[in-house]
Image (cartoon, rainbow, N blue to C red; front, side):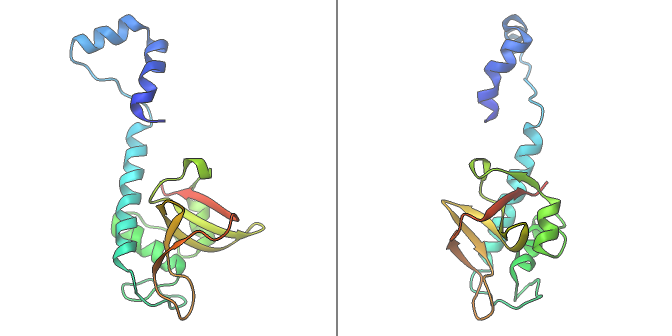
Length: 157
């Protein structure tokens, strides 16, 4: 729900007269949580751009950049460059994010691949069902369609 969509419900709670008075004197309506959501979106967008800039970088197990990456190394590197420190492994990163549903995902969120409760891979959601990730040995950082429904989504806070 966007900030603009929340205004009618805020007006109903505050009373139409209060909202009109506020508007008449040039005030602003503060929407709790909207600033932190915007900051998370900005952080994720920056991290996504960093990951995309690493297109073609070789996969190397245990590598976290700047020239070679494994999956969690790419996400760690991308978010660090965007201004946020993440733990090293995909499972640790999952535990550090705010878990969200697929319907709430947006570009810049992390996508965690799992088998049962075990997290085995991570990438950065790019939109339209695709992620930037470092897939496996012999491959390179690339944009790829999500290939399974066995994923969780997390937003870096």
